[in-house]
Length: 311
Image (cartoon, rainbow, N blue to C red; front, side, top):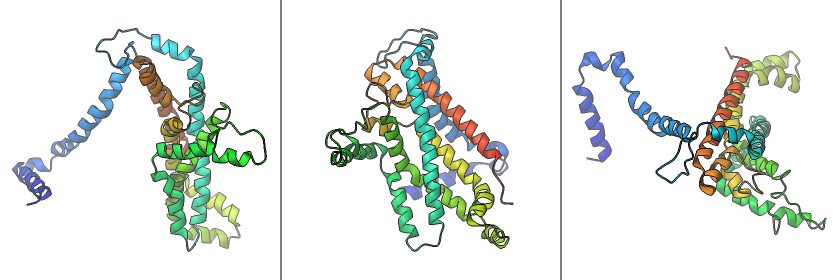
């Protein structure tokens, strides 16, 4: 007997041992939550509590001993000029990527919602970058952006004597990273918004067309309000993904030069493994948790208020 069949037979045997009066009781049904709660506690809640504890210490990440230093790491964080710049970068990655991804994704979704022959192929091509590892995607784009021998600078040098320092210029590298992140995940926004478009009843569009509404008026007064639930899901997911951006930054700039292109997640990584300053890295991690929670719940609350039910 295959292993899976044996496991199923074992589970059925255990269930038969449970008295009938218990099997359908609310107490027994609530016990089914226990495995999920245990996994959540072990892999999420416990590390979070330990990280919160380490933020009040001077732990180096490797030693078995550490000293409690109170609020010193938090005072250091709020007076650190690098942290202010990194927070700004993090908001650009989160809000900027979400804005561009949803604008481009909506354009693709509206286009693919038409009755086109190559609709399936186009959808696959647009979504394809999302299944590539962000780290690999970053290295691919690095060969486009690099100063010496980059594909973009090879073209620029045909018309200019100076190449563009796209990854070394602090005023440009953050936006280059945002563009790469937008390119990779605009397909995710497209799929979510396309699903939202396809559940809107066609009767609404036809009724508006009979009333004389043009394409723009139909989109503004019919499509856009009824698309709100899909927009909420897409925006919140993209904001969270952008605020915790790590892989693409590491591949393209490794947070440099200095910390000019770092996000909170890459700064936390560099502090832990580069400076062996795990206590301060935990403090940055707690700040990132607060920012992501506040921003995502605020956006979720705002977008939920503008949703229009279909029925």
